Length: 294
Image (cartoon, rainbow, N blue to C red):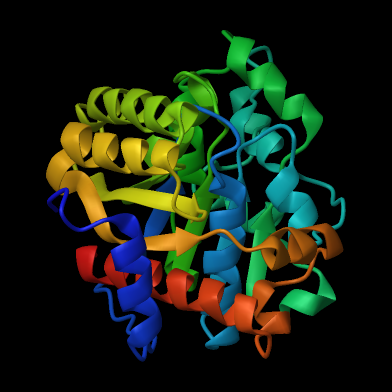
């Protein structure tokens, strides 16, 4: 993209275009949502993509790797016997012959999303204890456990969305990126948004050395508000620094998104409202971009 096309031009073009979901990847898509700064709308984006896919009858799995469990709460997943923390932890003092087979084990930890999300959404839920995995130096090969546990499970879904924690690398981010087939980098038009994408791209390049099939979908300008001098400055900085990685799509800021999150319902539940239609349009564009990348 070039600096003569602003993100507000992109949003205006999106609203003029009639959009339908086109999703025909050859295999399972495991999409990590990554930024190393908080407040850039990662979880909101994950929830929006899950909502639109489910509304189109697609099977979706949401994986919450953030110990704050915000996506778990939004998806209305109730507490179950196992969480994603149990998949990542293994007692090194246990008898190996008594441990369950790790391959496909994620299937035992799946929980249904809340009733408002319908029957097509499943969740690998987070819990506060997940934070302990960052300092876990005893579990063997911790960062590869999520990928192995999804073997034979991810194939049962049209899309798997991994919400990564907003931190500088670390074992949870590594686990998510190793399990993923694709990664998307959302950023707000702020200093934190820029830094979060910059640092996440650096981590991605390191992880890609071990997960050579991991593909960068691109940088998404997210929660775009009205045009101001500051926002225009950072829009230019995104193009200048990330160049061709910046996608020619964007997601606008609308208050109704926070209202849906607070009520733990999908944005598609308010699909008749103009602001919800704007967001659904944006999420549809993102999904079509991911589908083409796959």
